[in-house]
Length: 253
Length: 282
Image (tube, rainbow over all chains, first blue to last red; front, side, top):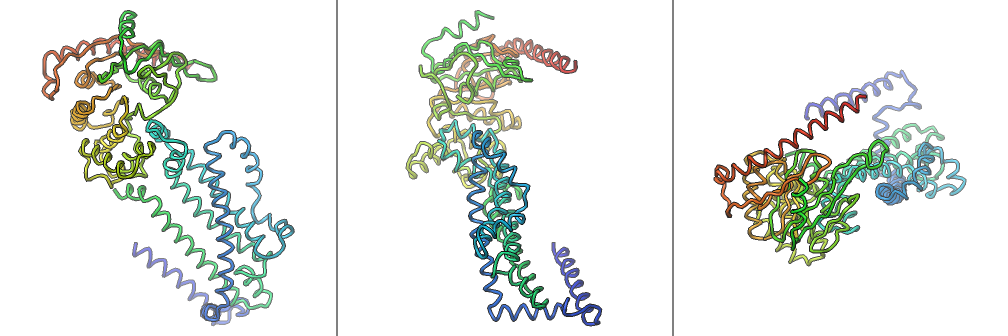
């Protein structure tokens, strides 16, 4: 474990060093590719001035709202499709038509419908995060061992207990995996939405700084986007460990 | 053979009464292509321990699923204390070969499940769960998850879970088949203790002749598919039954006689399988 960690650091710092040297030796134009030290410096200044925190907050808030909508809709639709044949027959063709359209392709129509700002971002984020959450929830429900259903029925479980105490916990490993993928997609979608359909947020910030040729700010913004995406993924891994503790324990045993 | 079936069906004052059960499944788009049960009738008296013996794959599990209410027979009916069975209920709990424990719940929560379904208050639930965990010698393991338990402990938890809801009868579907032989013998004795204490009606399904004789007051033998009941043999061995019973001459004699009946069916099941394979190849 420790060795992998070290090797990772070596390659990261190797690339940074190479990049710094390219700039210092004047092999690249520093207006296009400023050295990492300058980018880092810019990032620190942006944080200290609070400028980038505001944009990050805006983006996070959009992801949060959109992701929550997607989580509720995705889990509800996934469960219904898994347990109700009728719902499945009504919903599947519709969802299969919508699924192959990338969320990004909805940007023009989203801007037309919702204008510029939070609303198109909510729309795109929830759309993007919906499908991974939906498909994983469905896979989870379908993976429930029939033996567990039989056992619950023979112990007198009603529909509510069957759903809340059997079906949902049994599909939890899939469900959490879906939420994790969904959050990743949500972050991706919010940045894209802000690039074209917003006047705030990290996506807008890097786009604006491109227009003013402040490439060190563009790169600083990109680093912030990456760092926040990484942090969200780690948070989900933490949630995953907690939620499926019974599974983790079995792996350790 | 027919006479045996008739005498079985004639018994009165039954807790579980199955009448002319037939079950056929469709296969390859053909309705009722696979006939699993054909006219199975029997009755299990209140508080008795009855074993159902049959060759592997003869439809024993289908039968127990029908009695549990998990499966609707193509024809015939099951009554418990005169009540027609239309669906599953905690009046008839099942102990499965593969335990069926909820892996995401602790042992305590697993046993508590049926009591929650009955909407019992928490303090009562706790008391009952601990009492039954005591009975199956699982006290101290209540906070463990099923995946942390051995096979024997898992089945003990499943037994406690099936008992705690105070069912009218307990259906056991090859409950010891997945266990190693030592654990199997130990659990057989424990089941007898539990039966002694609770006086539940128990229907045990097994392919193991010794197990059937050791545990039950009566053994019903099923034929190979499509299954009927071809023998009804009382087991008049004294209780409590101790492990040394297995070397008793009367015990050995019963086992031999049952095995003689069963081996014909096992052979029939095998040749039936061979024919089916031949047909598939064509």
